[in-house]
Image (cartoon, rainbow, N blue to C red):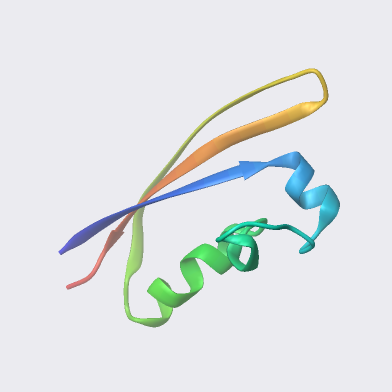
Length: 70
């Protein structure tokens, strides 16, 4: 079985730490927090790729993670 997880990251979230607002504020900023529950349930990372860019003083992008579970 496979699962695709996408994670949006931007440098301003890291600068502000955990003081974010929005529906995913408690899971934003650190990739490990997004994947922790899946890895704890026995999923493993099969592939990871990124797409990103920046402009002015912002850097942002996506991680796409393919998870597998036997």
